[in-house]
Length: 340
Image (cartoon, rainbow, N blue to C red; front, side, top):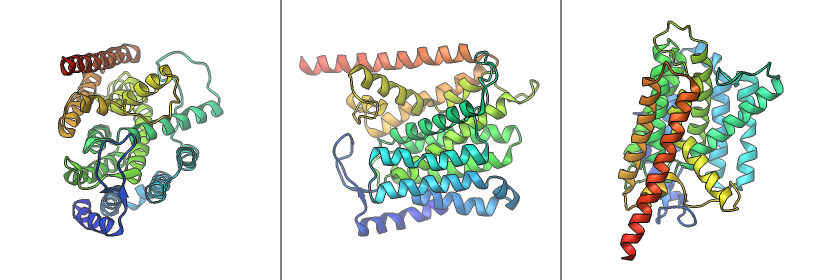
């Protein structure tokens, strides 16, 4: 409700100050619209947690909140005074290293995916930092359609939040569901036709939070006792299924760019949401189809919760390849039909 009431005021102020996201290049929208929607999302999130999260939990999660705030300010700096891609990437190492070093948000083993000997601490840190950076920016990259980043964020955060609640982790559950609630308010103003974009203030912050939950989920799920009804035997694959849209989309465009001899950081219109738009879908219908993919993968992880990582990851890869193939064929058919 705090976010919902804040957005109209924020939209009016940003319009008066002419703080717009400009069209052009690889972007789909062709109008100047206010950005910085992440400001109202974070405001709703912060005020709600002040009311609902006990002080001892604030102190226990202080490094997470400090890291989130730092990532928010990096996004704010980029939205107001644009950073170069390298500047934006390098600046993210500060909150990420803070989260890894002081909050101990680390990938500690292979979690049964394959056998590994003792993993040295430097390797654990490098792998953890790499994972947090990649997932944070992967979510940022899907923010290309009205309602898409908000919808995917709600689905992933709600899934994490409900699972944390089910295993008795009230603190992480409240953090996840509070942010999901703020994003729900954002969707009222970002659904097609949107009145505001979340900007990097929202995309980097939410992506960072999702990457934190992905690693935390893997660690907590792996160490749950076998008799716990909410334990999923495939910790890594289940986390991938929850965050499948940014993971699938990012891997897909990187592979396409490398095949074309381009840099993985080269901006283009090959993202998953671009493919649906090329087929003539509206923003709203594209978002609903992508959301359906996300929900299907989450359902798959739950139905196969007694199976191992290799099996589920294999099924996920086959499904993603199938989706990519169908989209490609549909565009070729549409192109031939237009030519004829």
